[in-house]
Image (cartoon, rainbow, N blue to C red):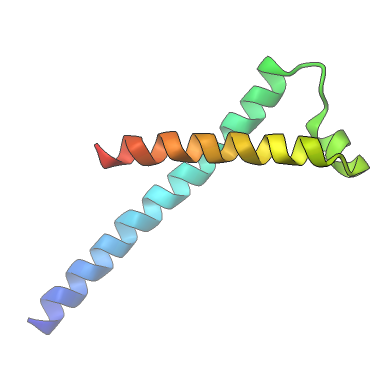
Length: 76
């Protein structure tokens, strides 16, 4: 009973870890895609280096939005 529970927990952990990595990659690439395609006139990285707080809030909002969409997609 103990080893079966442990192996099932480890498999579940590995699956969740894979989902997390996929969600992180999709989130970062979606932010880069939005930066290059939709917001061509705004340089996110340059504005962040200048200390523009509004750009940081906007970028984090996009990542949270993508994370919510991915979470609903993984639920099935």
